[in-house]
Image 1 (cartoon, rainbow, N blue to C red):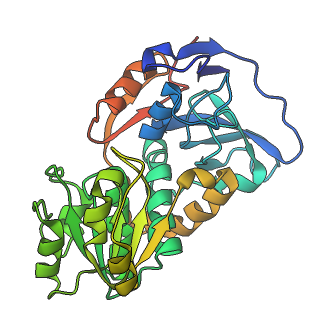
Image 2 (image 1 turned 90 degrees about the vertical axis):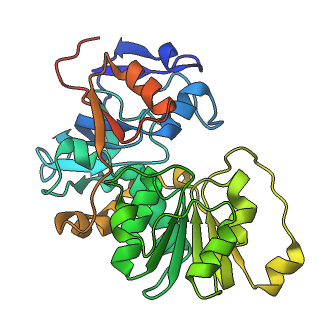
Image 3 (image 1 turned 45 degrees about the vertical axis):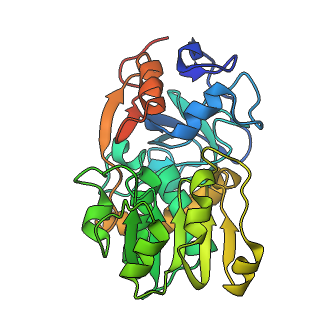
Length: 327
């Protein structure tokens, strides 16, 4: 099998293109031919050495879609999709022609999605679902503020919250793409106000947001906290710019606020599969749409794909590991 490999941490250029033997399957495992695998910002951070749990050498990559080649008879030939917070970190990941996965993690790919589209869902939608549905338990009629609304996770969050019947307000320091989900789903135009708490309260009759999904974190934490309505829930998934934050504890408890941390890396391939199973009907019905694909690259071109993700390309970069590559 052909694969990208991290032998030493560094820039995307340090990734090696290698040929390795296909894994010998153990009990309860399946072998999937990877037709498409997206590159996430966390994959770039992994290569750079930012993920302490990663052991080397390691094949990176979290999201994939492909065809089962070996495993239980009822699964062989099935088109599947998956993602996992263990893939690419503590077990070999998806940026390869094949991946070994637990049979328990296998889920059939929505027929409506092509392989590249299905491989662009994982991290974005699993993170959004974990924050909005599992952690904050956002309900119909509630107001959700999404900070970083123009990004991949923000776009997924907008779609899930809209499907739940929530009222959505988007905030982003950059103008989102015209086709970003936030433009079609937000109750208000995306807010880029200097005083975000005041702007949010002005659009909510002075109440604030029932829940704030902060996809940026760190530098936006105090701003996000200031946007909460009474008993509001703040979901944090990142710590951009600063890992330690301060806030007024008296204001926090007087408002009966809730602070919720969500880390998609804690959901391995099998746990992530359960979330994808819950999301699948929405994709089959066209309620949910993956982020637009900016570029498709081969394994040989994948280092440049990593570089573009590191530079903040809009849209998804997808690797097609079996598109004629040879290591």
